[in-house]
Length: 432
Image (tube, rainbow, N blue to C red; front, side, top):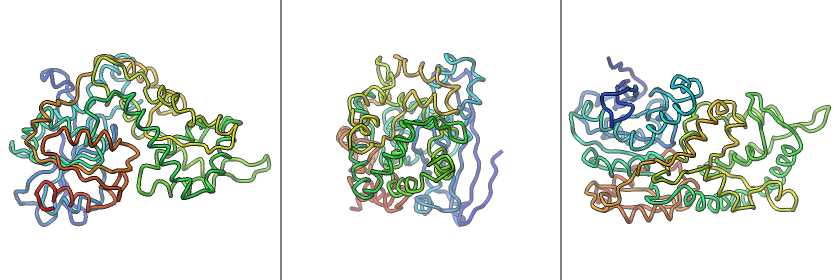
């Protein structure tokens, strides 16, 4: 039974669905999905077109808006919106260190998690769409990884899509994980350079923190082993509109004086552990590289291996000279499954996923080349998380896709600027 309730300007309804774990075996094991329907208060009884939102990730539940925040306000002017917790996230049969042992040991857990990629998410959408729309296709809005899923949707089930809107999420159709990260590290380095240009005082601050971590065994209050590599990974923030400023504010209060000498402050450690912990979204770390697995080649900890090709990211070497300590970001490494207490019980499972060689293709280039669904995509020219060159290659490979290339926004432009959704809707409607 669906439960409806109100927030300012919006009526919300909770939906629960039962779907196959493996859509190729519809009579087999099932899992539960959760989604929250949102409709404008004055339009709750109207027959509105549906828009399903696929959030970024992998491994994150849908946004928990209060009222009509962010892009939702614009969408509610004409759509009934479904905020889907993709399988394994939020309230949709979450996959965590607490729940995965129900599957058995690491091998069983790894087998289970092979069903948590974009192809399964698309099949979930197709399973629930007729129950909500009566069979009518819906508009799909995909942010970041949700955009990857949207391209998979256009490959596997375009009949279910009325219009596709993608923000910061056009994937490379053919690239292996190695290719993705080989393109990523130079982008990250450019973001770090821009940060240090904006806040030159942070060069010294980052070096001091890195020196401290190399000389001390620091364990954060939640049990996270705070290594220099973990500190560098705080650069993940640099891909968002406010990220550089937030990183600067974090670094400026890192140390306090104590009777035994300078130490990392409790306030700094508290903020760092919140930013570093995967407790709320472990699926991101577990399946992150598998979203690039499409052939018989294992991903094999691609980000870690490729990092060795960029020695400038080695903090110890930077400290031995006078160069800046470079931050990293948008990469998952095997050491995270040692440092993070939320991931430690899952390290063997993660290793088995990294070694798999049976990944199925997620995209159908021939079908995309014959696409008939209206598609518009925002490509952020300076995106740290998704390579703009790869995105534009894919844009050219999808028939009829209308790209909007901009450096006005960072990767989180949809969240920070409702104009992004307006622009994409105008593109698919030939209003620009």
